[in-house]
Image 1: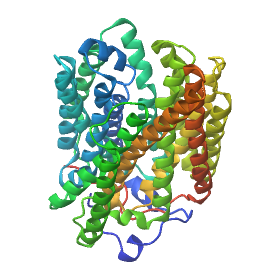
Image 2: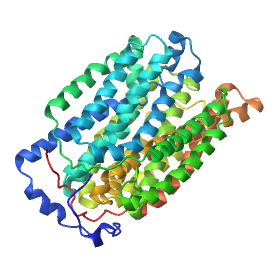
Image 3: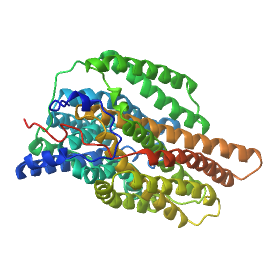
Image 4: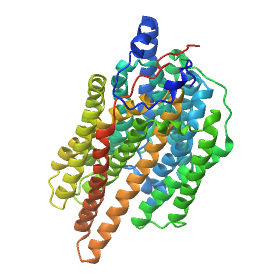
Length: 510
């Protein structure tokens, strides 16, 4: 996005101090009531639409047994409905930095929701697995565009004094939607066919598309910038290779046969990522990088992104492991599993806007320290209390503590990270944030599943029952998560509220 020019000395200055600027105060009075109302409509539409599309990222996991029976596929094949979705997200999200600079709000929104709606319809009528997978990939293409669009638009429209509240609402989309996906899936599958997971979503997506086409205004400034094809190719190999390789590690550890060693795509991904970073570094001075890595010159941005990665590892690792534990060890049904995890999702959703308002008053540091401590405490507790004889009511209690910690973490991190970069780099910051989320989610899933499988296998060789072995593997997985959480706890003390960025919240309407 191209914002009004800012003085060169402040453009590159570090943005880690907690000093508050009056830039937002200077901008806010310039916005008429009509403009403020327009901005609320734009962000509201984007929030609702993003919630619908992000919800679909985790909705398929609980449906896998039903799909295996109905479509006559194996678990390894069915897992591609989730893995393929995440791979597509990882490939498309890096390109959104370019798209959001080149095209305006309304056409980008229409393209994203059209892709998602088309993919949802295709999945609903799919006669078999290949078409269903194609529908999921088309869905993911639209989903990948929506989140960076939402975050970039919010940063451009919302004055700095109230960004925390808006980012709290965005946190609901990013963290709560994936968390309640399994619950909604379980409720639908209890009474209806798996197709209704798409049939119910399709009209909602179409309504959001129509409303956006009618009401959404172009609220950002575009500029013509070339697309570096080599960067696109390198990013595809880098992020898809890493995500596919890490997913394969988890599947291989659980006993699923793999066509190639998981090491191969991981190595390809690492090499491609190194080349991608080198190319972006060379293109950035000419302002034509696919992902402008100058965002990392801000210490606040760099630390926040690292903490977001750790938080997403904890979130997605928990989302994959807890249902396995609850069904395989405690013998709960799919619906029971979803309902026990629902309170945590609700708590996270309720707290996110509240945390955003607190951020606007006191900044991120205190919130992050509290949130990181709660996340770490919840993970350490899980390593001790999750065993064969654990009462079912303990699960939602610990999960709620984890959810409170994540609610205190996500909103300050999103706000501080994007607020610490220059306005013309908002689109790149949003794309980097989205990419890190997907890759970290893949890391969390692979890490927790691998430790679960290897821990269980070790116990089986010692003569333990399958239930006891699975419980032991679950504890091993959460132990790793607990250790990693200590890194985030230490880092939380170093995140400061960014200073005002000149040119922020000044937009053009076309």
